[in-house]
Length: 393
Image 1 (cartoon, helix red, strand yellow):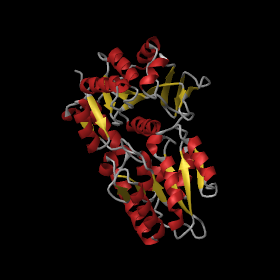
Image 2 (tube, rainbow, N blue to C red):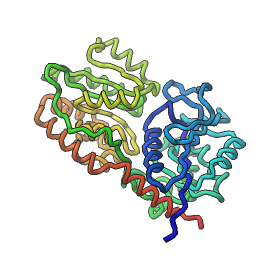
Image 3 (cartoon, rainbow, N blue to C red):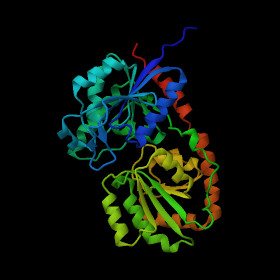
Image 4 (tube, rainbow, N blue to C red):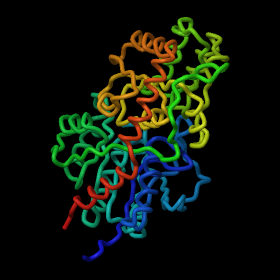
């Protein structure tokens, strides 16, 4: 039997290391699995010089235009024109000559678009490579607002979704919504859940350590859509109903809401109870998970929520709103309430804090569920099959 040619896979994303958010961690994990699989020769990331740890994001001119990080080749380009950023919160385009040079140098067999909000760049790269590469598009399905400024974004995502070879989504809810909202044929959309890193496995926790406060952790950008300001307000309202000392730790870079959160903390003398950790390394995040007892994120839209999966893998029960992607992806070890009922969240949070037995039971369920449901190895095997099915021949 003839051995199949090893392929080159190029991811397209507005950010990569040293910035490390959810999308960047997906690239890191999938890329590492691809390189170990023996089926992929090169993994690359076409990205920008943008630093998304600051608000508003700015270019970091100290970064090299090309480097290799843990085997993954990183190509950074300046974006242009800046005015198109008015359509959304991400860089809107790339210098065409530089894109052509990256494509010539890397020779991708597969181009995988990872963020549909970066729609102008995705469209331009697709157009430049439409005859020489297969194209796969991840749709996280962050539905753009229904106003004039976002109509172009919706149109381009619909255009690309119907023309790329395959579309990848992380759960059945997003498949249904992408088909309905963007008009993408369902037989082109493949559901492939994301995975978990093997070194984050824990035996489950569920009970706080003797003599220490019970720790709530929330992981995500400090932004409106992630709900951390709402969470801090809710924590302030409900903490007198707890039967033990509780602290709240917020992990994530500034998405525009850090100043408002800090001001609320000062005004209500919450400095001893609420800690803003900000952006942390993967090692520090793992240490924080190991010290935590409950994960809570009042996000209003999610494509999958990798932080939910990670918290579950540490045996940490999770609380959030029953928005579609969370409801269909996470079925055990979680407490999901009616969107966006903050009173219901307060009641369930009080119950989970005060009832040690319930918390321990949900924590054990969380741990067992996460390690059965989410595997980067399985994700990558299915993506490789998807790439093989994205046939241009």
